[in-house]
Image 1 (spheres, protein in one colour):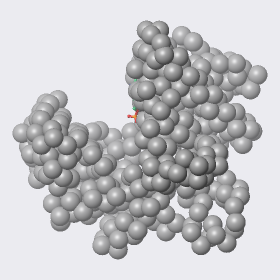
Image 2: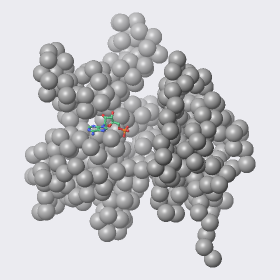
Image 3: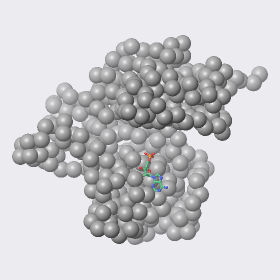
Length: 405
Ligand code: AMP
């Protein structure tokens, strides 16, 4: 007997935007997706695609409740009837699960309360995600809602990588450890890489570079993460679109004590006004390259420095993870910058031939979109570009939960 088509509604709720996708995990296809942006601002923009049709609307959208309603309305307009799509679950991306929540979990009131408690650990991400969960549960009360945590993949990070060298008792009391984020993407990409190369996952040492607006690196041995660049919060590690990544913690005390900045202001500066945006004036790499090429000063030099700092940090992490893994079989680039920016990929790996990593310039420049090899034929480490698909990974996690529970 043929199994009915199963569809998962995946919701990713941010502070001023709500994204959704309708994914059929068995076939690995996305049948619809949409976004409502600038929620709570004077004019919001909503866009939904279903089956090749696209509808857009600009209208004020006051809150997340109105945003989800509008998204479903546009989906309906595009021909996607929620009731006819065979939706079996709603998957929610939650960034921080703390120490106790890590496995994909059916959401009940206790899970919502727990996720809300974790807000201080991910102030930018958890509160809007919880809001998304609440409005979706209210709107679709008969479906199971499942939380998939960004921290899950890194839950069993070896203690040597997960532990901060700070006062042990204080760390224990406040559950301070390196949790790691973008886990859904790092796991998905490492599995895809093994499949693409037709090699067993448990025999591969991999570095995954998730370079999007948020950016993180991970070292994965035999399918299990052994290190990752993000920590207690998604601020640690690589230079990102608007986040600083690694800094000397002394900067925070100095700004608090000497510049008399309130802690909220420092946090906001490090999260929203730092990274390549803070240095170069824009968080979009296309724009940075444009400013550098245009040569108008001081923008060009500022954009160049932002780019150089970004690349320098990225190279340091690649070097560190080559050492953590010893013998690295695969390095994979993914997410907006990793998938599209050939110059970043080239500059990240230039000169690493003595460490076994050699790009093929021609393959690297090829504008192809799918999973592809970009290393030279004789490079001991294979370098790949693989598009990430967190929605598909979340949808797969959801159907696995349904099968488990
Ligand atoms: P993500 O968070 O994965 O959606 O990545 C978003 C970022 O990807 C943007 O801020 C850009 O910096 C970058 N990006 C997207 N498309 C391109 C492109 N064609 N070339 C360079 N960077 C890109």
